[in-house]
Amino acid sequence: HEIVGIVTEVGSAVTHYKVGDHVGVGTYIDSCRECEYCNDRQEVNCVKGGTFTFNGVDKDGTVTKGGYSSYIVVHE
Image 1: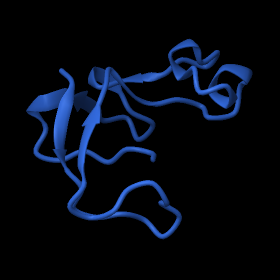
Image 2: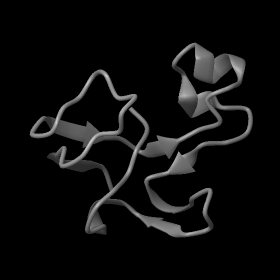
Image 3: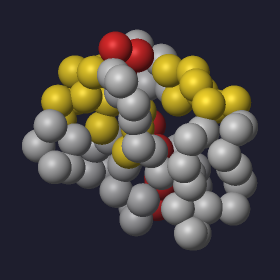
């Protein structure tokens, strides 16, 4: 369910990655990014609940497919 790949695009606010970088994505792909845990970089404990990489429901209502996905968009 974890994902490895190569960055193909980055947004204008991205500072830590560039196109061509090798990256990995763990079991969570998103969180609220606002609670005390998210602010302490402990998103796994997000009070609003994180979005799992595999078989989770993303904010747009789609079901995440983990490493079986053709592509994935994640927050830096």
